[in-house]
Amino acid sequence: MSKVFFQTETGAQVPAVTAEQMLEVDRLAMETYHLGILQMMENAGRNLAHHVLELITEKNAVVTVLAGPGGNGGGGICCARHLHNRGIKTHIVLSRSMDELGEAARHQIKILQAAGVQPIQTSNAEEMITSAGLVVDALIGYSLRGVPHGLTADLIQWCNQHAVQVISLDVPSGMDATTGEAPGVVVQPIRTLTLGLPKTGLRNLQSDIYLADIGIPPELYRHLGISFEPPFGDRDWVRLIAAA
Image (tube, rainbow, N blue to C red; front, side, top):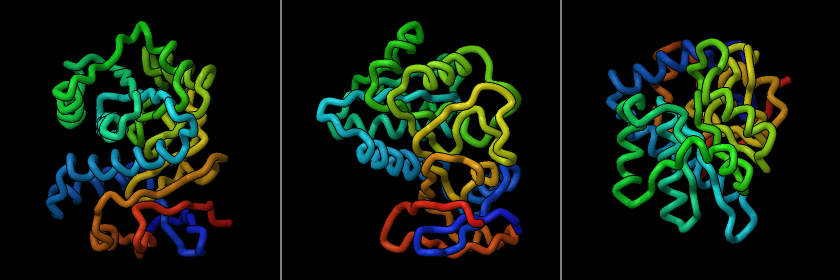
């Protein structure tokens, strides 16, 4: 069982997991509990969009979504669709070419393309970050492997230099989800919406942390020896506080 805990504002205890544990959660969710990655991604993206709508205050605010090639990026692209559906002008910047996207992320971008929304040219990425009322960080998530480099590192750096406000999906990009350490540049969000269970590396994060329900049954966590009683009630997310 994880030895790192968070708690909700009402005092309910929430265990944290390492990146390795979360990888096993995702595997069991798909292989044993028959939850599709697109199903969980839809829950993540929709929840993220609601948080974005809560944070943007200007009527004509523009949102820029930075999306990586994996599941985290797919969640960000899904969020962009929900924002588009609500009339929010949303730009999407991909850290990789379309050919390098994972299957789920490519599926999400094709839905938007069918609706007439295309990723912007990466040459305009810095400008789109600077001009946005809010930037969504969906570049890496819990799957960080080494120091961010190339365009991903540039996008993180531009976020920190120019963004008015940033919300990260699951884990701020560049942060080790298990240790909380940053081997290179790391996004500095005002809010992080973490998925399934909080990651142990978030315990020292200074910004707000929320936990989103993405539909994973509590029995799955118990299968891994993690005792978890869902604290959501009639909500889709709860605010977390690091336990003392």
